[in-house]
View 1 (spheres, rainbow, N blue to C red):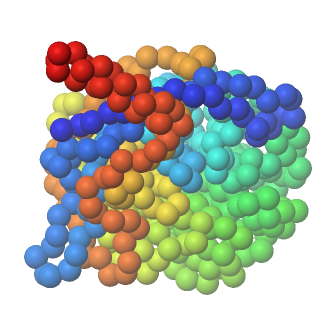
View 2: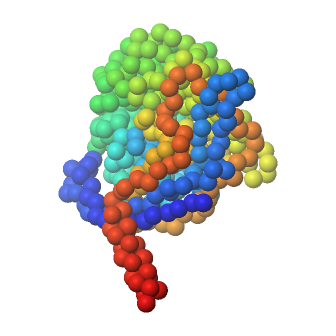
View 3: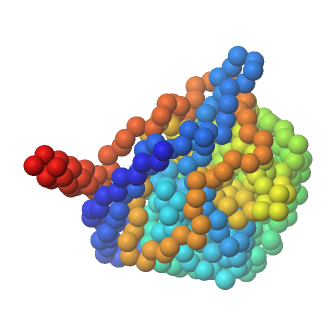
Length: 411
């Protein structure tokens, strides 16, 4: 049984990258209080260890392959980029808040900690959008962008290009520096306040740069780097490679492979503390690992409508890792919860669009959980009600209605 409570209220945006006046928006809150038990996608192993349990809350289907996703730290939304050039923002119930057409495939995307801004790489451009989907600025990089990211607070954007450039801009699109370390830069990530930028290249190198663009260290990954992610303060860098490895390196470049799969790693996501790593593979699996590379949870295989394996192209999760989303080239986004708490949801009333397809996802293929070694990101108990903007009003109105009916039937 799926129970839905909706409420309304007022919210005001106070985080504006352009410095313009704040704009009030009408919001609605939707809470899924009792996800179906049948949507559990993990199980305990037979070796006596406890498996991390997740519930698949919903899937959403796009017209084109999903190429990039990102979410705010509270899991309240999912920013999505597609091969068709669409940038979209979904809330944590799977409803589309807005879409923006960039005109070229999205090759990298990031959202700020609070969801106030989104950066995307598309064609030869980096672009920044605000929380309502309005384009704030675009910048021509002079070469095809292969990776893009935004710092958690939204002050800096980074990009990597096919020409081998790593670029850092400010929040208004002004170029701060550009450097060319080697071959095509296939992935980038930028830490808080732009203090550190991580980058991966087609020739298998991982770089950490400081706020001036100076290279602090390099690491040979052994094969093309397809994704990078950075922890707060540059304390750790995760990378996924075409050689089927997940690497975890410290702030001096020490470390190496912590997990090896059977097929290329298309996407990685590292939590701010460096204690959890999400990974998506080319054969349709998503994994959640701890900092030692122990697999805590697995989802897969992801199938195409024709019944073939589909790649997991993107992974993101909240902090702590209570909510996790993956994107696939089968056009779907999947949203999971590990926690007993329902994720916060805010829907912008102005400029919203009707979701094309959002359904509770059916589970297909092999699904299992690896033994949990350390503490879990969240409890696995049934989700409990959570108060949100408009909740009290909705409950009050409902109580009045019930009382009126009761009195009428009593007479």
